[in-house]
Length: 369
Ligand code: ATP
Image 1: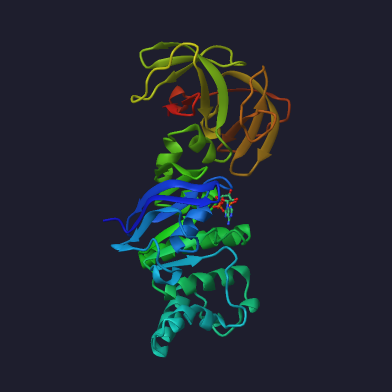
Image 2: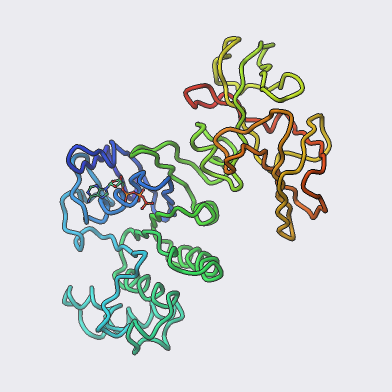
């Protein structure tokens, strides 16, 4: 039986539908990360699970308890917020033990729970300080510690690392992963940070406009996106997209005409999709790391970003333009796994393995991955 079950949950704010009938089952011990563009409803859904927002319809269960209408403190969930939400007048120890104190637990038990959580999070030396004497990273550890002492069935995290600088964020990513392993706890984590999603999740849920686009392991979503939306959402730099038209099909190979390409592009179709008709509008995708030097496509360098261990190129030329790209100019993004001395304006030849191409129909549905 799944540990957390969200069944057809809807959340309306007046006439606005923020969450539109979302169903999701989370197994015990899973680390589920919810991602999606700003306003897609991920925080709202998390707040619904936490009981901070009453839901319009649907049910939420934890284990065999229906918590749909339970009070926030009575759901077996604990939430960690982006802005820490610590009580400023209390010491770290009192902050971390507060929920147990309110629940009327014996002092010795509270003390032991706080000491253990502090040890796990390596904040024992700060237990007698007030939050204002702590750094952002330390405050976030206290906020996590406050959740741990409650020993919840499910941990909820709402962008907990967004206020930290880049170095601390990557350190905390590792620590949260370690904590998850150590506690074996069920965790639901909301973020807009792809790296957090890709590195920490056992499964990623991609939300878009209040509905789930796709659920899967990070690599399933990255390698086999079901839709144009998921393909474009995961991956940085973003997948290159080109609009094209189907010329003909031979068996399960499709010839696609793309303005600016020297000849038709041949794309092997996936097994489980219908073959599109000649003339159909399609969108082809190729990830920046799948574009390699040496090939039939001659472009020129518009921009070079040398990142040390890798080089990002943005290429242009011959009327070839990417659509819906990171650069407004429609450049082709290329990610090379090594150092290259290339100058702006220099000609380069590129190509790709046809097996690395993606194709989507005009409704955004996958045809080839
Ligand atoms: P972000 O990454 O920007 O936080 P999100 O995916 O977490 O985005 P939500 O905060 O869940 O988005 O908001 C989803 C939608 O619901 C947004 O369009 C938002 O404006 C709307 N919304 C959220 N809370 C309320 C509210 N209390 N009243 C009315 N509309 C709201």
